[in-house]
Every structure is written in C-alpha cells, then in structure tokens.
Length: 578
Image (cartoon, rainbow, N blue to C red; front, side):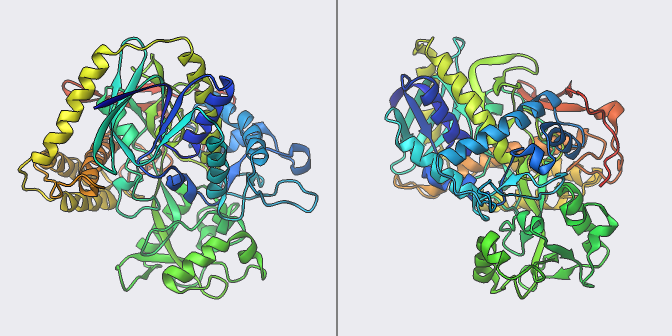
C-alpha cells in the first residue's frame, strides 16, 4: 500500500473543492503540494448539474439591493435556523466570488450595458442570481478546472474512492482510498485536509442528484467521531421531472413559469400570494403535495407518480432558447415535450442536504459540539456552517461553495506550511482499513446490496418526504435498524480488480444507511415544523424548544444527539409570510 504525503489534501472536486485548491495554491505562492481526490473524473462532479445561478449583491444602487437585504432574505428563508454571523460572511463574500468567476472566464449572461445579468429566485426580494443560461454550474466548473490544470503543484487523482478518514493528535490527517481503475489501495496523508464531497440526497430514491451523491465525506466524518449537524433538514426541490427526477431549475419559475394543477389553475395564490411561484422551496413543495393530496394532481402512466404541471408556454418567443436552453433540450429528449408548446410534469424531489459536517464560521471541522479539530476543514454542501438553516434559498449554495472554498483553501495552506508529518499511527490505521476492504470481497453473505438499497429508498421516500408523521418515522427508524443489521451480510458478487463498481456500490451503501439513520433519528426528536422539516402532529414552529441546532455524534453506545444554540443577530424570529 502506497502512502502519499501532501501539504493540503482536498477530498472532492466540485465547486467547493476546486475553489479551495486554487486559493490554497495562490495564497501559498505555489509553495505547498496539493492533492485533489475524487471518486469521479473531476469534471463529472455534481456541481456541473447546478443550473440556475449564484447569488450576490452586485449593483446595490442600480437594483435597490443591499447585503443586509440579502441577509434578511436568507435568514427568513431558513426559518430563522441559520447562524446570522455565518450569513453575514456569505453575503459579504458572494459578490467577490462572482467577480472572481468573471475573471477566470465564466460567460455570464449580460445586460445591454455589459453588466452581469441577475434573475429572480425563490424567497429573494430582488433579482440577485447571476447566471450563465441554465448551465451555470458547468461553466463555473469548466473555468475552475482550467485554472487548476494551470497550477503545477496540484495533483488530481480521478476515480479514487475514499473509504475512511484518519485523524491524528498532532493535527495531521488523511484517508484511505481505492483506485477504481485497478482496486489498488492508497493512503493519502496531509498536514491539512479539506472535505468537500457534496450532499447526500441519494438516500432517497426520487432525487435530482447524480448517483455519486452518497454523502461519503459526511458519513466518514461521522464514523470517525466527528459531529454532524441539522441532518433532519433535507430540501425537496419543487420541480423535478416526472418520472426521472431530473432537475427543472428554479430559473424556469424565475423567468416567469407558472405552476398549474389538474384544473389548469395557478394554485400558488392559495399558499404564497405575494410571491406565487417564487416562494421559498419548502413552501412551494408543500403546496404541490397538498394539491396532489387534495385530488388536484395527475398520474404518470409509466411510474404511477402523481404530479402537477410547470407551464412555460406563455413566455415570450426566444426566451426559453436564450435562458433555458438545457431545459428545452432535456424535456424533448426525455419526454418528447417542447416546453414552449406543452406543459412539463413535475413533483418535489430530494435535492439538497442543509445539514452536514459540523463546522465553525471559518469552515473548521468540530471534534465536539464546541471545539474545533486542528487541521481539518469542510466546505460546500457536506459542511453545515450553518447559512441555510431549515431551508436553503436557491442560488445561495454556489455562493456558499465559493466563499468557504476560498476560506478553507487559504487557511489550510497557511496551516500546512507550519507542520511536519507523524507517520506512526496513520500507517497502522491505513493498513487496518486496507485489510477490511479486502475482507469484504471474501465475505460469504446472503443479502443482495441492491435489494437492500431499494428498501432504504422506499422507507425514505415514503416516511421522510415533504410531509412527515411520528408513526411513519418510528417505522422508518426500526426498518433502517433492520437494514443496518442486514448490511453485515451483504455480498460482493464481482471479485474483479478493474472498475469494480459492485464493490463501490456496497461501500456507498454503508454511507447511505448511516446517513438515512441519522436523518430519521434527528427528525423524530425535533417535534416541530420548521422549514423543510414538517411533522403533521406538530404543525407549528416551536422557538421555545427548538430554536437550536441538532448535533449527532457517534459514541461507544451508538448515536448521541444533543443541541447547541442558533446564533441570532439583528433579525429576530418572526412568522414567515410571503
């Protein structure tokens, strides 16, 4: 087993990971060795699927906008669970990041005067989402990847799947990874490590996320004893294509799209009259499911899924081709529907994990609810700072990835220039993990991993969806315990060394089961409705008991759940009205 030493180690190659690498390189003057480790080819990271745009206040006087207004929209959208000091960092840093991407070549849509164009997004008071058609994530990733390739001391390890996080007392850290091309086990050791592995919405069956979004970094951190935060809050994007779950960007509504029920009525006036289709995502998702539950939905013949319509037919000619070209291409390819002529069938799908690895405002990973771990950071969707609270506003995610990518990359490079390496314990733990991976292939199990995964998806899609109830979640907890126990009898039928996706799938399933169990346990304990977490028996928000973050941490006795206060500021909690 090779042990590879680096100054800065970045696990994940999406917008957060690549941004961190660039700023680690720049801030050190190219004096640190950096490795990016990705279980995909780096340019296939899920960030390329981000469609709508990135938020930031660019022209405050021209657009009657301000950082304070952006902060207010974000805190209100979060149902007052966001930490307001972190939100302040987000809104102050976001404009700088949009300009940074402008400088490295992102082709933003422009106004006639040459200024970057910004479109409306849900929950935002004014249009403040910069965009590149409906392929924003792809263009940002392409620009970042080109920049990384120009940095001589950044090594990229494509298609290396990390399986365990190793932490040492001196602050150094690293992980064990399997080269998917040949099943070779490698140990990556670093003076500073950044986890940027993205979200975990693949714990659900109906999701907008790519198959790679299995929460690997979050699950590894949890198993290493790192606390995770607010995992019960999973965002369901209102408009996913039925039956595939492919994302139909919020920009479709930002550009003027309507939501219609089976009667052809724009029903959002019953739920958010001032914002209509541009209410926050949690509100729109609940409205859609309420319409369906009230018999105002339609049924897909192929899947049996119930849905409503997204209607773009009234948009002026050329607007879809100019600003939503990928949506048009996708609906034609998948359903033979031209959105300029026909309505699009949609329903909410799991989209974003507001929770994640517990970090402080600087992106430092916490080793306890209140104490940071020296030398370890997390950035992007896998990190819970928290700026999204109980519900993320669309287009704040790319801002978060960029702001904390820069911050963590700079801090990690600075830290690494002061440290040496301690080889002893790291090598022992790495060899133990390598032996465990080998033994998995020799296991004589009797449980099919794919059938087990389907069971998990059925449980999560049914009982942890847009509306939750205590009986259903209690059933889910028991079912997931059974699934967890049976995972120990899962077998790997493919014994080969070359691109053994069967082995990879089994390892990913372990991460998914761990995270599904955490989501469910934390959801059961939060007896209120706040943002994306809605419990039928507890329909009101309860600030007296639950204006706090949920912390889940692994212990010798199993999962330990505790709470820490939300960091309030100038925006006092009040009823959300739109």
